Length: 370
Image (cartoon, rainbow, N blue to C red; front, side, top):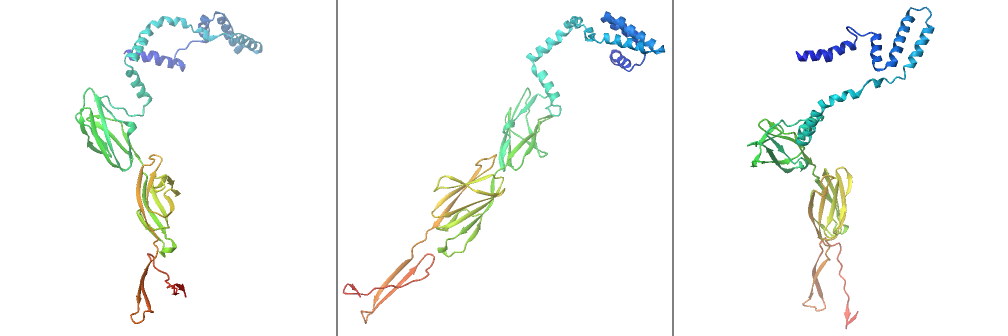
C-alpha cells in the first residue's frame, strides 16, 4: 500500500500535471505564487494578464499590446533563480550527516565493499568469479611459452575453505591438477603450438578464462648448399640439400640459401673469425650467404625474431682438402750388357690427376755439361 501511495504521489501526480491532465492552476494563481517570492512583480504580472484579457475583446489592440510589451520588459530583469532559498534546506542536513558518516567509515574500514561493487558496475561486460570460500591465483604476466615447448603452470588457492581437487579445462577437455600441498596445484602444458585458452574450476567455483600465449619460435625449415669448386679440381659444381657439415677442396665457394619460419634475422659466426656476420635477406622466408673456404673451420647459425632474440643456434663443421703437390718416384737401371745404356722407371701421381708428364735430362762429361 505504501508503495502504491508513493508511486501515485511522486510519479503519477507530477506526470498528470506535466501533461496538463486534470485540475491545473490558472495564470492568476501562478502570478500570485510568483508574487510571494517577488512582491514587486505580482502587481505587474496581474496587470499584464488583465491587459491581455482586454486585448482579446478590444477593437483597437495596438495601445494595449504596447502597454503589455512595456510591462514585460520591466520584469525581464527580475532574478527568478533567487526564488530558491537554499538556507531553508539547512535544517535537513542533520538527516544527511548519518549516512555520510557511515559511508566514510565504510570507505576506511572496508573499502572492498565499495570498490568491488563499483568495479562490477564499471566493467559490466567482464566475468567475475562467483563469491566463494576460495579463489585461484595465477601468474598472469608469465603465461607465455616458446612454440613447441612445455609450460609448467602453478596455481595457488587461497580462502577460508580449500578444495581437495582442482581441475583445468583445455579445448573442452578437463584434466585434474597435481596437488603439491593444500594451497598449491600444478599442471604441465606439453608441445604447445598455438595460443591456448583455459580455465580452472573446483566444484561450482570457476576462474576467469586465461590464455597461454605462444611465442613463435624462429626455425630453419631447410637449406640448400651450392658448391662452386675451383677450376683446378676439374669437378662439376653441385648442390646439396640440408647438409651443414661439409668437406670441400680448398678454394671452394660455398653459398647457403636458408628457408625459415617466423625468423626476422640470421647471423653466422665462423670460429676462425670470431665476429658475427649478418646473413642477407632475400624475402620473408629466404636468406643467403656466400664464402670461399680456404681452411678448416666451424660455423654457427643464430636464428632470431622480435619476440625471441637469439632464440636458437646450430653448429656445423667445415673440412678442407688442400691441393697437394704432384708426387714423382723414379728408379734408375743400368743395362747389363751396356753400362752406357740407362733406364728410368717410376710413378707420378696427383690428387686431382696429371695433365702431362715430361722427361728432362742433361748430359755431363768429365763433370761438365756436354
